[in-house]
Length: 381
Ligand code: SF4
Image (cartoon, rainbow, N blue to C red):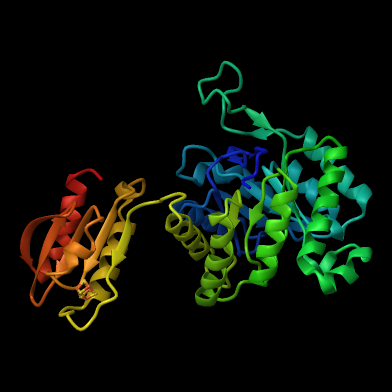
């Protein structure tokens, strides 16, 4: 079941029917504010809507505060990108992050004393961060408030379960994760704090799927989904696509983070591809290309990569939802790609350009991509 409850993480609505938001995390040293800000910019440019930044030590708090302060000016988006602090073990770092203006914090409450978690919740509830709205009588969307409390993600993992759940975790790892998350959610509710979301990630796809299915059946709180420590870009992409994709296809998940051992910009690109594959959200043109076969007479791999790279690099098309086909033969190609908005079907030395299923013209192979891009741009797609 999709989460019924909506929270705001700064300017980004999460849950309650809001679009699934894309999150990633910087991997620079947070103490190097300039490098971290540069990575925030790259992530936002790729479509990241929530950026998580770790706050490992108090010494890095000033740099973290600078990132929070300067990120809105960097981000070329309508509203300032919310910065979420990733905090482990030391509850005082969570307070420092809130004081620095973080829109959200991610904690694993199981690594802290309950009285300290309570204090984090109290401070988060009293803090106010910009939400991008105008509040009552404002000019923004009527439902958008001007300021909101600091949101908290309760991020449970297998390594920090309460003592009484550790035996259960051996037998039923997913159920143990869910139990731990729901205990904390109940605490937060008792304390009158509802601006939280939950995550129960595992590095195992089956455990992740089972845990989120169990969790979604028992809470209406927004869920942050992902497969943790998924691996390198290639294998992690597959694990994430399977795990996150399966959950999203069932309507489970309000924010997603693809975890890859690599450039976090790749995480954002993969997340968008997962959302697009499920027709949940689109960011820019979608390229479909034939798998090639014995009829292929040209370098379709090179052509498809060229088209994809040039479409992705065209800022004017970032909001476009067109589908572009790159096919390997002039006879079957246009028919096989008849649902595409635009396309090329290449044969030996020559190919055809088509527009919404209609053949436009035949062109020498070397002119096909330029002609395709020109037609798309001329249509203002
Ligand atoms: S479009 Fe043509 S070349 Fe590509 S797979 Fe189909 S038949 Fe083969």
